[in-house]
Amino acid sequence: MHDELAEVRDFLAQCPPFDSLDPDGLAALTRRFVIRYLRRGASFPPEGQPCLWLVRQGAVELRTVDGELARRMAEGDVHDAACLPDSPEIGWAGHAVEDTLVYGLPRGDLERLWEEHPDFRQQSLSKLVERLRRARRRSEAAVERDLGSLPLASLIGRAPVCASPAATIREAATQMTRERVSALLVVDRDRLCGIVTDRDLRSRCLASGLPDRTPLSVIMTPDPCTLPPDAAGFDAVLTMTRKGIHHLPVVDGQQLLGLVSSTDLLRAQRISSVHLADRIHRATDLAELVVRCAELPELWLNLVRRGEGAVVLGRVVSGIADALASRLLVLAERRLGPPPVGYAWIAFGSQGRHELSLNSDQDNALVLADEFEPEQHAAYFTRLAHEVCGGLAACGIQPCSGEMMATNPQWRQPVAAWSRLFGDWIDHPDPHKARLASNLFDFRTVHGDDQLTAPLREQIARRCTQHQTLLAHLVVNTCAAPPPLGFFRQFVVIGDGEHQGELDIKRHGLLQIVDLARIHALGNGIRETGTVGRLRTAEGTRLLSREGAETLAAAFEFLLGLRTRHQQEQIGKGLRPDNFVAPATLGAAERHHLRDVFVAVARQQKALLLAFPHAARS
Image 1 (cartoon, rainbow, N blue to C red):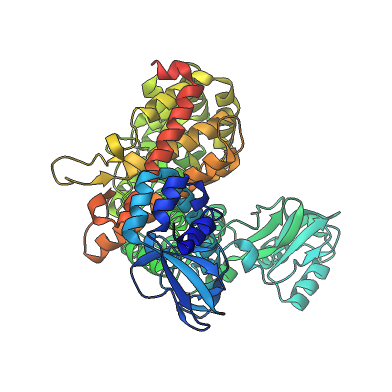
Image 2 (cartoon, rainbow, N blue to C red):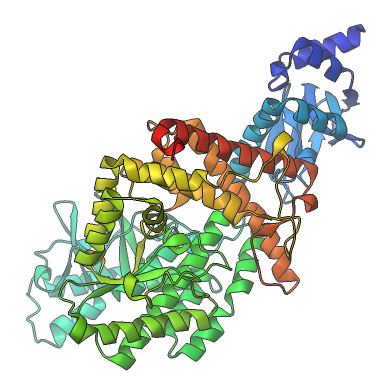
Protein backbone atom coordinates (compact mmCIF):
# COMPACT_ATOMS: atom_id res chain seq x y z
CA MET A 1 0.00 0.00 0.00
CA HIS A 2 1.24 3.49 -0.87
CA ASP A 3 2.72 5.33 2.11
CA GLU A 4 0.06 8.03 1.98
CA LEU A 5 -2.73 5.44 1.91
CA ALA A 6 -1.07 3.57 4.75
CA GLU A 7 -1.07 6.78 6.79
CA VAL A 8 -4.80 7.25 6.09
CA ARG A 9 -5.47 3.62 7.06
CA ASP A 10 -3.52 3.89 10.29
CA PHE A 11 -5.38 7.06 11.25
CA LEU A 12 -8.79 5.51 10.47
CA ALA A 13 -7.88 2.52 12.63
CA GLN A 14 -7.67 4.86 15.63
CA CYS A 15 -10.94 6.72 15.02
CA PRO A 16 -14.36 5.42 16.14
CA PRO A 17 -16.38 4.02 14.49
CA PHE A 18 -13.87 3.10 11.75
CA ASP A 19 -11.77 1.27 14.35
CA SER A 20 -14.46 -1.46 14.41
CA LEU A 21 -13.64 -2.59 10.84
CA ASP A 22 -11.49 -5.64 10.17
CA PRO A 23 -8.11 -5.06 8.44
CA ASP A 24 -9.35 -6.07 4.97
CA GLY A 25 -12.41 -3.87 5.22
CA LEU A 26 -10.34 -0.97 6.49
CA ALA A 27 -7.82 -1.35 3.66
CA ALA A 28 -10.58 -1.41 1.04
CA LEU A 29 -12.28 1.60 2.56
CA THR A 30 -9.06 3.61 2.75
CA ARG A 31 -8.77 3.65 -1.04
CA ARG A 32 -12.18 5.33 -1.31
CA PHE A 33 -11.27 8.38 0.78
CA VAL A 34 -10.29 11.68 -0.84
CA ILE A 35 -7.91 14.14 0.79
CA ARG A 36 -8.47 17.90 0.99
CA TYR A 37 -6.30 20.64 2.41
CA LEU A 38 -8.07 23.75 3.73
CA ARG A 39 -6.28 27.00 4.40
CA ARG A 40 -7.28 28.99 7.45
CA GLY A 41 -10.61 30.74 6.76
CA ALA A 42 -11.63 28.34 3.97
CA SER A 43 -15.28 27.23 3.84
CA PHE A 44 -16.28 23.87 5.25
CA PRO A 45 -17.40 21.35 4.11
CA PRO A 46 -15.39 21.48 0.86
CA GLU A 47 -17.22 21.25 -2.44
CA GLY A 48 -17.33 17.82 -4.01
CA GLN A 49 -18.89 14.37 -3.75
CA PRO A 50 -17.99 13.25 -0.21
CA CYS A 51 -20.82 13.36 2.30
CA LEU A 52 -18.69 12.33 5.30
CA TRP A 53 -15.64 14.30 6.38
CA LEU A 54 -13.05 13.30 8.99
CA VAL A 55 -10.70 15.93 10.43
CA ARG A 56 -7.10 14.67 10.25
CA GLN A 57 -5.32 17.79 11.45
CA GLY A 58 -6.37 21.33 12.30
CA ALA A 59 -9.71 22.67 13.51
CA VAL A 60 -13.11 23.60 12.06
CA GLU A 61 -15.93 25.69 13.53
CA LEU A 62 -19.62 25.22 12.65
CA ARG A 63 -22.08 28.07 13.20
CA THR A 64 -25.88 28.16 13.12
CA VAL A 65 -27.85 30.33 10.70
CA ASP A 66 -27.84 32.99 13.45
CA GLY A 67 -24.06 32.97 13.56
CA GLU A 68 -23.86 31.24 16.94
CA LEU A 69 -20.94 28.87 17.47
CA ALA A 70 -22.53 25.41 17.57
CA ARG A 71 -19.65 22.95 17.24
CA ARG A 72 -15.87 22.97 17.11
CA MET A 73 -14.26 20.02 15.34
CA ALA A 74 -10.70 18.82 15.89
CA GLU A 75 -8.59 15.78 15.01
CA GLY A 76 -10.69 12.62 14.74
CA ASP A 77 -14.09 14.38 14.62
CA VAL A 78 -16.62 13.33 11.96
CA HIS A 79 -18.99 15.58 10.02
CA ASP A 80 -21.75 13.57 8.32
CA ALA A 81 -24.65 16.04 8.10
CA ALA A 82 -25.05 15.47 4.35
CA CYS A 83 -25.56 11.73 4.98
CA LEU A 84 -28.17 12.00 7.74
CA PRO A 85 -31.28 14.06 6.91
CA ASP A 86 -32.15 14.33 10.61
CA SER A 87 -28.82 15.96 11.44
CA PRO A 88 -29.20 19.37 13.11
CA GLU A 89 -25.96 20.41 11.35
CA ILE A 90 -27.57 20.59 7.90
CA GLY A 91 -27.36 24.21 6.81
CA TRP A 92 -24.74 25.20 9.39
CA ALA A 93 -21.89 27.23 7.91
CA GLY A 94 -18.37 26.09 8.70
CA HIS A 95 -14.84 27.35 8.19
CA ALA A 96 -11.32 26.24 9.04
CA VAL A 97 -9.98 28.23 11.99
CA GLU A 98 -6.44 27.06 11.16
CA ASP A 99 -4.78 25.20 8.31
CA THR A 100 -6.67 21.91 8.20
CA LEU A 101 -6.39 18.50 6.55
CA VAL A 102 -9.59 16.46 6.07
CA TYR A 103 -10.46 13.04 4.63
CA GLY A 104 -13.74 12.64 2.71
CA LEU A 105 -15.84 9.56 1.85
CA PRO A 106 -18.34 9.68 -1.06
CA ARG A 107 -21.98 8.90 -0.33
CA GLY A 108 -22.13 5.70 -2.37
CA ASP A 109 -19.14 4.21 -0.57
CA LEU A 110 -20.54 5.18 2.81
CA GLU A 111 -23.92 3.60 2.07
CA ARG A 112 -22.24 0.37 0.92
CA LEU A 113 -20.26 0.42 4.16
CA TRP A 114 -23.49 0.75 6.14
CA GLU A 115 -25.05 -2.17 4.26
CA GLU A 116 -22.02 -4.41 4.82
CA HIS A 117 -21.44 -3.37 8.45
CA PRO A 118 -24.77 -2.68 10.25
CA ASP A 119 -22.94 -2.15 13.57
CA PHE A 120 -20.98 0.69 11.96
CA ARG A 121 -24.27 2.28 10.94
CA GLN A 122 -25.67 1.87 14.46
CA GLN A 123 -22.67 3.65 15.96
CA SER A 124 -23.18 6.53 13.53
CA LEU A 125 -26.83 6.75 14.54
CA SER A 126 -25.96 6.67 18.23
CA LYS A 127 -23.78 9.70 17.70
CA LEU A 128 -26.59 11.28 15.70
CA VAL A 129 -28.96 10.79 18.66
CA GLU A 130 -26.49 12.62 20.91
CA ARG A 131 -26.18 15.51 18.43
CA LEU A 132 -29.93 15.69 17.97
CA ARG A 133 -30.40 16.03 21.72
CA ARG A 134 -27.72 18.68 22.01
CA ALA A 135 -29.23 20.58 19.08
CA ARG A 136 -32.70 20.32 20.58
CA ARG A 137 -31.45 21.84 23.82
CA ARG A 138 -29.76 24.66 21.90
CA SER A 139 -32.83 25.32 19.74
CA GLU A 140 -35.09 25.33 22.77
CA ALA A 141 -32.94 28.09 24.24
CA ALA A 142 -32.66 30.02 20.97
CA VAL A 143 -36.16 30.02 19.45
CA GLU A 144 -39.29 31.61 20.77
CA ARG A 145 -40.93 28.58 22.34
CA ASP A 146 -44.59 28.05 22.87
CA LEU A 147 -45.58 29.01 26.39
CA GLY A 148 -47.32 25.69 26.86
CA SER A 149 -44.02 23.80 26.75
CA LEU A 150 -41.95 26.14 28.91
CA PRO A 151 -41.18 24.84 32.41
CA LEU A 152 -42.76 26.75 35.25
CA ALA A 153 -39.31 27.46 36.68
CA SER A 154 -38.69 29.81 33.75
CA LEU A 155 -41.92 31.71 34.42
CA ILE A 156 -41.25 32.59 38.06
CA GLY A 157 -40.59 36.31 38.09
CA ARG A 158 -39.61 36.86 41.72
CA ALA A 159 -38.92 35.23 45.06
CA PRO A 160 -42.05 34.02 46.89
CA VAL A 161 -43.82 36.55 49.09
CA CYS A 162 -44.65 34.76 52.34
CA ALA A 163 -46.31 35.32 55.71
CA SER A 164 -46.85 33.34 58.89
CA PRO A 165 -50.26 31.76 59.59
CA ALA A 166 -50.30 33.89 62.76
CA ALA A 167 -50.03 37.15 60.77
CA THR A 168 -53.21 39.25 60.83
CA ILE A 169 -55.43 40.14 57.92
CA ARG A 170 -54.33 43.78 58.22
CA GLU A 171 -50.65 42.82 58.14
CA ALA A 172 -51.27 40.60 55.09
CA ALA A 173 -53.13 43.35 53.22
CA THR A 174 -50.37 45.83 53.98
CA GLN A 175 -47.68 43.41 52.83
CA MET A 176 -49.52 42.53 49.58
CA THR A 177 -49.99 46.24 48.80
CA ARG A 178 -46.34 46.99 49.50
CA GLU A 179 -45.08 44.02 47.44
CA ARG A 180 -47.67 44.57 44.68
CA VAL A 181 -48.81 40.95 44.63
CA SER A 182 -52.28 39.43 44.37
CA ALA A 183 -51.53 36.39 46.52
CA LEU A 184 -49.60 35.64 49.68
CA LEU A 185 -48.07 32.25 50.47
CA VAL A 186 -48.56 31.14 54.07
CA VAL A 187 -45.51 29.32 55.43
CA ASP A 188 -45.13 27.63 58.79
CA ARG A 189 -41.61 26.45 59.76
CA ASP A 190 -40.43 26.52 56.12
CA ARG A 191 -43.42 24.46 54.97
CA LEU A 192 -46.10 25.79 52.64
CA CYS A 193 -49.36 25.38 54.49
CA GLY A 194 -51.74 27.79 52.77
CA ILE A 195 -52.41 30.63 50.35
CA VAL A 196 -54.37 33.88 50.67
CA THR A 197 -55.43 35.87 47.59
CA ASP A 198 -56.88 39.35 47.21
CA ARG A 199 -60.16 37.63 46.41
CA ASP A 200 -60.03 35.92 49.83
CA LEU A 201 -59.56 39.30 51.49
CA ARG A 202 -62.71 40.57 49.80
CA SER A 203 -64.98 37.53 50.11
CA ARG A 204 -63.81 35.97 53.37
CA CYS A 205 -62.94 39.14 55.30
CA LEU A 206 -64.74 42.28 54.16
CA ALA A 207 -67.92 40.49 53.06
CA SER A 208 -67.99 38.44 56.27
CA GLY A 209 -67.17 41.34 58.59
CA LEU A 210 -64.14 39.65 60.14
CA PRO A 211 -61.98 41.96 62.28
CA ASP A 212 -58.66 42.94 60.74
CA ARG A 213 -56.76 41.28 63.61
CA THR A 214 -58.01 37.83 62.54
CA PRO A 215 -55.04 35.51 61.76
CA LEU A 216 -54.47 34.30 58.22
CA SER A 217 -54.94 30.68 59.34
CA VAL A 218 -58.69 31.41 59.56
CA ILE A 219 -59.16 32.60 55.95
CA MET A 220 -56.35 30.90 54.04
CA THR A 221 -56.88 28.01 51.63
CA PRO A 222 -54.98 25.20 53.38
CA ASP A 223 -52.60 22.82 51.56
CA PRO A 224 -52.92 24.56 48.18
CA CYS A 225 -52.44 22.71 44.92
CA THR A 226 -48.81 22.93 43.71
CA LEU A 227 -46.75 21.92 40.69
CA PRO A 228 -43.04 21.08 40.35
CA PRO A 229 -40.66 23.46 38.53
CA ASP A 230 -40.35 21.18 35.49
CA ALA A 231 -44.11 21.11 34.87
CA ALA A 232 -45.07 22.85 31.62
CA GLY A 233 -47.07 26.04 31.32
CA PHE A 234 -49.84 23.94 29.82
CA ASP A 235 -49.98 21.80 32.97
CA ALA A 236 -50.41 24.97 35.01
CA VAL A 237 -53.25 26.45 32.97
CA LEU A 238 -55.13 23.14 32.86
CA THR A 239 -54.71 22.63 36.61
CA MET A 240 -55.99 26.15 37.23
CA THR A 241 -58.95 25.52 34.96
CA ARG A 242 -59.86 22.21 36.63
CA LYS A 243 -59.48 23.56 40.14
CA GLY A 244 -61.04 26.96 39.47
CA ILE A 245 -57.99 28.79 40.83
CA HIS A 246 -55.73 31.56 39.52
CA HIS A 247 -52.50 31.05 41.48
CA LEU A 248 -50.17 28.04 41.63
CA PRO A 249 -47.21 27.74 44.01
CA VAL A 250 -44.17 26.09 42.43
CA VAL A 251 -42.53 23.59 44.79
CA ASP A 252 -39.46 21.42 44.32
CA GLY A 253 -39.85 18.68 46.92
CA GLN A 254 -40.24 20.66 50.15
CA GLN A 255 -38.62 23.83 48.77
CA LEU A 256 -40.96 26.69 47.83
CA LEU A 257 -39.61 28.37 44.69
CA GLY A 258 -42.28 30.90 43.81
CA LEU A 259 -45.78 31.54 42.49
CA VAL A 260 -47.25 31.58 38.98
CA SER A 261 -50.62 33.20 38.26
CA SER A 262 -52.99 32.87 35.31
CA THR A 263 -52.20 36.50 34.46
CA ASP A 264 -48.49 35.66 34.36
CA LEU A 265 -49.14 32.83 31.92
CA LEU A 266 -51.26 34.82 29.51
CA ARG A 267 -49.07 37.91 29.67
CA ALA A 268 -45.97 35.91 28.82
CA GLN A 269 -47.10 35.15 25.28
CA ARG A 270 -49.96 36.51 23.26
CA ILE A 271 -50.39 33.67 20.76
CA SER A 272 -49.78 30.20 22.13
CA SER A 273 -51.36 26.92 23.08
CA VAL A 274 -52.10 28.41 26.50
CA HIS A 275 -53.88 31.31 24.82
CA LEU A 276 -56.03 28.89 22.81
CA ALA A 277 -56.76 26.80 25.92
CA ASP A 278 -57.85 29.95 27.76
CA ARG A 279 -60.25 30.91 24.94
CA ILE A 280 -61.65 27.38 25.01
CA HIS A 281 -62.16 27.76 28.76
CA ARG A 282 -64.11 30.99 28.17
CA ALA A 283 -66.31 29.64 25.34
CA THR A 284 -70.02 29.90 26.08
CA ASP A 285 -71.42 27.18 23.79
CA LEU A 286 -70.52 24.34 21.42
CA ALA A 287 -70.58 26.56 18.33
CA GLU A 288 -67.85 28.75 19.79
CA LEU A 289 -65.81 25.69 20.78
CA VAL A 290 -65.99 24.39 17.20
CA VAL A 291 -64.59 27.71 15.95
CA ARG A 292 -61.80 27.72 18.54
CA CYS A 293 -60.75 24.13 17.86
CA ALA A 294 -60.53 24.87 14.14
CA GLU A 295 -57.45 26.93 15.06
CA LEU A 296 -55.56 23.90 16.33
CA PRO A 297 -54.05 22.72 12.99
CA GLU A 298 -52.65 26.19 12.30
CA LEU A 299 -51.30 26.45 15.84
CA TRP A 300 -49.72 23.02 15.40
CA LEU A 301 -48.08 24.11 12.13
CA ASN A 302 -46.75 27.27 13.76
CA LEU A 303 -45.21 25.25 16.56
CA VAL A 304 -43.57 22.90 14.03
CA ARG A 305 -42.12 25.89 12.13
CA ARG A 306 -40.80 27.35 15.38
CA GLY A 307 -38.89 24.18 16.17
CA GLU A 308 -41.01 22.48 18.84
CA GLY A 309 -40.25 18.77 19.07
CA ALA A 310 -42.74 16.00 18.34
CA VAL A 311 -43.05 15.05 22.03
CA VAL A 312 -44.03 18.63 22.91
CA LEU A 313 -46.53 18.69 20.03
CA GLY A 314 -48.21 15.61 21.50
CA ARG A 315 -48.52 17.34 24.87
CA VAL A 316 -49.97 20.46 23.22
CA VAL A 317 -52.63 18.55 21.28
CA SER A 318 -53.45 16.47 24.38
CA GLY A 319 -53.69 19.63 26.47
CA ILE A 320 -56.10 21.25 24.03
CA ALA A 321 -58.20 18.06 24.08
CA ASP A 322 -58.16 18.14 27.89
CA ALA A 323 -59.29 21.78 27.93
CA LEU A 324 -62.03 21.00 25.41
CA ALA A 325 -63.39 18.02 27.36
CA SER A 326 -63.32 20.02 30.59
CA ARG A 327 -65.24 22.90 29.05
CA LEU A 328 -67.80 20.59 27.46
CA LEU A 329 -68.40 19.00 30.86
CA VAL A 330 -68.91 22.39 32.51
CA LEU A 331 -71.37 23.44 29.80
CA ALA A 332 -73.19 20.10 30.03
CA GLU A 333 -73.56 20.48 33.80
CA ARG A 334 -75.10 23.91 33.28
CA ARG A 335 -77.77 22.39 31.05
CA LEU A 336 -78.33 19.18 33.02
CA GLY A 337 -77.90 20.57 36.51
CA PRO A 338 -75.27 19.61 39.08
CA PRO A 339 -74.18 15.95 39.04
CA PRO A 340 -76.09 13.79 41.54
CA VAL A 341 -72.83 12.15 42.72
CA GLY A 342 -69.15 12.93 42.26
CA TYR A 343 -67.36 11.79 39.12
CA ALA A 344 -64.04 11.90 37.28
CA TRP A 345 -63.75 12.10 33.49
CA ILE A 346 -60.68 10.13 32.46
CA ALA A 347 -58.78 9.93 29.19
CA PHE A 348 -56.72 6.89 28.25
CA GLY A 349 -54.85 5.70 25.18
CA SER A 350 -52.74 8.38 23.47
CA GLN A 351 -54.48 11.23 25.28
CA GLY A 352 -53.83 9.58 28.63
CA ARG A 353 -50.14 9.37 27.68
CA HIS A 354 -50.06 13.04 26.53
CA GLU A 355 -49.29 11.73 23.01
CA LEU A 356 -52.39 12.75 21.08
CA SER A 357 -51.92 13.56 17.39
CA LEU A 358 -54.08 15.59 15.02
CA ASN A 359 -55.80 12.47 13.70
CA SER A 360 -56.32 10.58 16.98
CA ASP A 361 -59.79 9.47 18.07
CA GLN A 362 -61.53 9.53 21.44
CA ASP A 363 -60.62 7.27 24.37
CA ASN A 364 -62.50 8.31 27.51
CA ALA A 365 -64.53 6.96 30.42
CA LEU A 366 -66.40 8.00 33.57
CA VAL A 367 -65.42 6.98 37.09
CA LEU A 368 -68.40 7.55 39.40
CA ALA A 369 -68.54 7.81 43.17
CA ASP A 370 -69.68 4.63 44.90
CA GLU A 371 -72.88 6.42 45.99
CA PHE A 372 -74.03 5.97 42.39
CA GLU A 373 -77.46 4.32 42.13
CA PRO A 374 -78.30 3.19 38.58
CA GLU A 375 -82.05 3.73 38.92
CA GLN A 376 -81.61 7.29 40.20
CA HIS A 377 -78.44 8.50 38.51
CA ALA A 378 -77.81 6.54 35.29
CA ALA A 379 -79.93 8.80 33.08
CA TYR A 380 -77.96 11.90 34.09
CA PHE A 381 -74.54 10.42 33.32
CA THR A 382 -75.78 8.84 30.10
CA ARG A 383 -76.84 12.28 28.85
CA LEU A 384 -73.63 13.84 30.13
CA ALA A 385 -71.47 11.30 28.29
CA HIS A 386 -73.37 11.67 25.02
CA GLU A 387 -73.26 15.46 25.13
CA VAL A 388 -69.52 15.55 25.79
CA CYS A 389 -68.53 12.84 23.30
CA GLY A 390 -70.78 14.41 20.70
CA GLY A 391 -69.16 17.78 21.37
CA LEU A 392 -65.68 16.31 21.02
CA ALA A 393 -66.68 14.82 17.67
CA ALA A 394 -68.12 18.15 16.49
CA CYS A 395 -64.79 19.78 17.37
CA GLY A 396 -62.80 17.28 15.30
CA ILE A 397 -61.90 14.47 17.73
CA GLN A 398 -63.58 11.50 16.10
CA PRO A 399 -65.46 8.79 18.06
CA CYS A 400 -63.61 5.56 18.79
CA SER A 401 -64.60 2.87 16.28
CA GLY A 402 -64.39 0.29 19.08
CA GLU A 403 -66.70 2.36 21.33
CA MET A 404 -64.05 2.80 24.01
CA MET A 405 -65.86 5.91 25.23
CA ALA A 406 -67.99 7.08 28.14
CA THR A 407 -71.08 6.70 25.94
CA ASN A 408 -70.65 2.93 26.33
CA PRO A 409 -72.17 1.85 29.70
CA GLN A 410 -69.27 -0.57 30.11
CA TRP A 411 -66.95 2.42 30.53
CA ARG A 412 -69.24 4.35 32.89
CA GLN A 413 -68.87 2.68 36.30
CA PRO A 414 -68.52 3.42 40.05
CA VAL A 415 -65.06 3.19 41.63
CA ALA A 416 -65.76 -0.23 43.17
CA ALA A 417 -66.83 -1.65 39.80
CA TRP A 418 -63.71 -0.28 38.11
CA SER A 419 -61.59 -1.79 40.88
CA ARG A 420 -63.20 -5.22 40.39
CA LEU A 421 -62.73 -4.94 36.64
CA PHE A 422 -59.06 -3.99 36.92
CA GLY A 423 -58.54 -6.73 39.50
CA ASP A 424 -60.02 -9.31 37.14
CA TRP A 425 -57.75 -8.17 34.28
CA ILE A 426 -54.70 -8.43 36.57
CA ASP A 427 -55.59 -11.68 38.38
CA HIS A 428 -57.29 -13.62 35.56
CA PRO A 429 -55.91 -12.22 32.29
CA ASP A 430 -56.40 -13.45 28.77
CA PRO A 431 -55.39 -11.84 25.45
CA HIS A 432 -58.59 -9.76 25.25
CA LYS A 433 -58.33 -8.51 28.83
CA ALA A 434 -54.68 -7.65 28.24
CA ARG A 435 -55.67 -5.54 25.23
CA LEU A 436 -58.23 -3.68 27.35
CA ALA A 437 -55.65 -3.18 30.10
CA SER A 438 -53.23 -1.77 27.54
CA ASN A 439 -55.71 1.01 26.82
CA LEU A 440 -57.29 1.68 30.20
CA PHE A 441 -54.16 1.38 32.34
CA ASP A 442 -52.77 4.51 30.64
CA PHE A 443 -55.62 6.57 32.08
CA ARG A 444 -55.33 10.11 33.42
CA THR A 445 -57.95 12.30 35.14
CA VAL A 446 -58.99 15.19 32.88
CA HIS A 447 -61.88 16.67 34.88
CA GLY A 448 -63.59 16.03 38.17
CA ASP A 449 -62.52 14.44 41.44
CA ASP A 450 -58.94 13.11 41.49
CA GLN A 451 -59.65 11.27 44.73
CA LEU A 452 -61.95 8.87 42.89
CA THR A 453 -59.20 7.70 40.54
CA ALA A 454 -56.27 7.66 42.99
CA PRO A 455 -57.13 4.18 44.40
CA LEU A 456 -57.30 2.77 40.87
CA ARG A 457 -53.87 4.14 39.98
CA GLU A 458 -52.49 2.71 43.21
CA GLN A 459 -54.09 -0.66 42.46
CA ILE A 460 -52.44 -0.83 39.03
CA ALA A 461 -49.00 0.20 40.31
CA ARG A 462 -49.06 -2.18 43.27
CA ARG A 463 -50.65 -5.33 41.88
CA CYS A 464 -49.24 -5.56 38.36
CA THR A 465 -45.77 -6.11 39.79
CA GLN A 466 -47.10 -9.20 41.56
CA HIS A 467 -48.83 -10.85 38.58
CA GLN A 468 -46.47 -11.98 35.85
CA THR A 469 -49.27 -13.65 33.86
CA LEU A 470 -50.75 -10.31 32.80
CA LEU A 471 -47.30 -9.11 31.74
CA ALA A 472 -46.85 -12.33 29.74
CA HIS A 473 -50.12 -11.69 27.88
CA LEU A 474 -49.03 -8.11 27.19
CA VAL A 475 -45.76 -9.47 25.80
CA VAL A 476 -47.63 -11.92 23.56
CA ASN A 477 -49.91 -9.16 22.25
CA THR A 478 -47.13 -6.74 21.39
CA CYS A 479 -44.85 -9.42 19.89
CA ALA A 480 -47.69 -10.73 17.72
CA ALA A 481 -47.09 -7.68 15.51
CA PRO A 482 -43.34 -7.64 14.73
CA PRO A 483 -41.87 -4.59 12.97
CA PRO A 484 -42.45 -4.53 9.19
CA LEU A 485 -39.09 -5.91 8.09
CA GLY A 486 -38.67 -8.97 5.89
CA PHE A 487 -35.63 -10.93 4.77
CA PHE A 488 -32.51 -8.83 4.09
CA ARG A 489 -34.12 -6.05 6.17
CA GLN A 490 -36.51 -5.05 3.42
CA PHE A 491 -39.62 -3.09 4.38
CA VAL A 492 -42.89 -5.02 4.34
CA VAL A 493 -45.25 -2.41 2.92
CA ILE A 494 -48.98 -2.48 2.24
CA GLY A 495 -49.53 -4.46 -0.96
CA ASP A 496 -52.66 -2.88 -2.41
CA GLY A 497 -55.43 -0.37 -1.88
CA GLU A 498 -55.28 3.32 -1.00
CA HIS A 499 -52.02 2.98 0.92
CA GLN A 500 -50.16 0.64 -1.38
CA GLY A 501 -46.40 0.89 -0.90
CA GLU A 502 -46.76 2.63 2.48
CA LEU A 503 -46.16 1.80 6.14
CA ASP A 504 -48.50 2.59 9.02
CA ILE A 505 -45.78 3.92 11.35
CA LYS A 506 -48.25 4.29 14.22
CA ARG A 507 -49.48 0.69 14.17
CA HIS A 508 -46.15 -0.89 13.15
CA GLY A 509 -43.71 1.30 15.04
CA LEU A 510 -44.95 3.85 17.54
CA LEU A 511 -47.48 1.61 19.26
CA GLN A 512 -44.96 -1.20 19.56
CA ILE A 513 -42.61 1.10 21.48
CA VAL A 514 -45.58 2.33 23.54
CA ASP A 515 -46.38 -1.30 24.39
CA LEU A 516 -42.80 -2.08 25.37
CA ALA A 517 -42.61 0.98 27.62
CA ARG A 518 -45.94 0.06 29.25
CA ILE A 519 -44.77 -3.48 30.03
CA HIS A 520 -41.63 -2.19 31.71
CA ALA A 521 -43.64 0.43 33.63
CA LEU A 522 -46.27 -2.02 34.89
CA GLY A 523 -43.63 -4.60 35.76
CA ASN A 524 -41.79 -2.07 37.93
CA GLY A 525 -44.72 -0.26 39.55
CA ILE A 526 -44.04 2.96 37.64
CA ARG A 527 -46.95 5.42 37.75
CA GLU A 528 -45.77 7.52 34.79
CA THR A 529 -48.01 7.17 31.72
CA GLY A 530 -45.96 8.93 29.01
CA THR A 531 -43.85 6.62 26.83
CA VAL A 532 -40.54 8.48 27.04
CA GLY A 533 -41.04 9.10 30.76
CA ARG A 534 -41.71 5.42 31.33
CA LEU A 535 -38.57 4.40 29.46
CA ARG A 536 -36.39 6.86 31.34
CA THR A 537 -37.81 5.79 34.69
CA ALA A 538 -37.46 2.08 33.87
CA GLU A 539 -33.89 2.24 32.54
CA GLY A 540 -31.49 0.08 34.48
CA THR A 541 -34.21 -2.24 35.77
CA ARG A 542 -34.02 -6.03 35.49
CA LEU A 543 -35.36 -6.28 31.94
CA LEU A 544 -34.35 -2.92 30.45
CA SER A 545 -30.76 -1.72 30.32
CA ARG A 546 -29.91 1.94 30.16
CA GLU A 547 -28.75 1.48 26.56
CA GLY A 548 -32.01 -0.29 25.67
CA ALA A 549 -34.10 2.49 27.19
CA GLU A 550 -32.09 5.18 25.39
CA THR A 551 -32.41 3.32 22.09
CA LEU A 552 -36.19 2.92 22.39
CA ALA A 553 -36.64 6.55 23.44
CA ALA A 554 -34.57 7.75 20.49
CA ALA A 555 -36.48 5.42 18.15
CA PHE A 556 -39.80 6.73 19.47
CA GLU A 557 -38.75 10.34 18.97
CA PHE A 558 -37.46 9.54 15.46
CA LEU A 559 -40.79 7.99 14.45
CA LEU A 560 -42.72 10.90 15.96
CA GLY A 561 -40.53 13.32 14.02
CA LEU A 562 -41.04 11.34 10.81
CA ARG A 563 -44.82 11.43 11.32
CA THR A 564 -44.72 15.13 12.14
CA ARG A 565 -42.96 15.98 8.87
CA HIS A 566 -45.37 13.75 6.96
CA GLN A 567 -48.43 15.34 8.54
CA GLN A 568 -47.00 18.82 8.03
CA GLU A 569 -46.79 18.10 4.29
CA GLN A 570 -50.34 16.75 4.26
CA ILE A 571 -51.80 19.76 6.05
CA GLY A 572 -49.93 22.03 3.62
CA LYS A 573 -51.70 20.22 0.76
CA GLY A 574 -55.11 20.49 2.43
CA LEU A 575 -55.23 16.75 3.26
CA ARG A 576 -56.35 15.10 6.47
CA PRO A 577 -53.22 13.98 8.36
CA ASP A 578 -52.62 10.25 8.73
CA ASN A 579 -49.88 7.82 9.80
CA PHE A 580 -48.97 6.28 6.43
CA VAL A 581 -45.45 6.91 5.14
CA ALA A 582 -43.97 5.54 1.92
CA PRO A 583 -40.36 4.40 2.46
CA ALA A 584 -39.65 5.07 -1.22
CA THR A 585 -40.13 8.80 -0.60
CA LEU A 586 -37.44 8.89 2.12
CA GLY A 587 -33.77 9.55 1.55
CA ALA A 588 -31.35 6.63 1.62
CA ALA A 589 -29.94 7.51 5.02
CA GLU A 590 -33.40 8.01 6.50
CA ARG A 591 -34.48 4.60 5.20
CA HIS A 592 -31.43 3.12 6.91
CA HIS A 593 -32.39 4.88 10.12
CA LEU A 594 -35.96 3.57 9.87
CA ARG A 595 -34.62 0.04 9.43
CA ASP A 596 -32.43 0.48 12.49
CA VAL A 597 -35.47 1.63 14.49
CA PHE A 598 -37.39 -1.50 13.51
CA VAL A 599 -34.40 -3.72 14.28
CA ALA A 600 -34.11 -2.12 17.73
CA VAL A 601 -37.81 -2.74 18.42
CA ALA A 602 -37.54 -6.36 17.26
CA ARG A 603 -34.53 -6.87 19.53
CA GLN A 604 -36.43 -5.56 22.56
CA GLN A 605 -39.45 -7.73 21.72
CA LYS A 606 -37.19 -10.78 21.52
CA ALA A 607 -35.65 -9.92 24.90
CA LEU A 608 -39.10 -9.86 26.52
CA LEU A 609 -40.05 -13.18 24.92
CA LEU A 610 -36.90 -14.70 26.41
CA ALA A 611 -37.78 -13.21 29.81
CA PHE A 612 -41.31 -14.67 29.61
CA PRO A 613 -40.75 -18.12 28.03
CA HIS A 614 -44.36 -19.20 28.68
CA ALA A 615 -45.42 -16.15 26.61
CA ALA A 616 -43.27 -17.33 23.72
CA ARG A 617 -45.08 -20.70 23.79
CA SER A 618 -48.56 -19.11 23.79
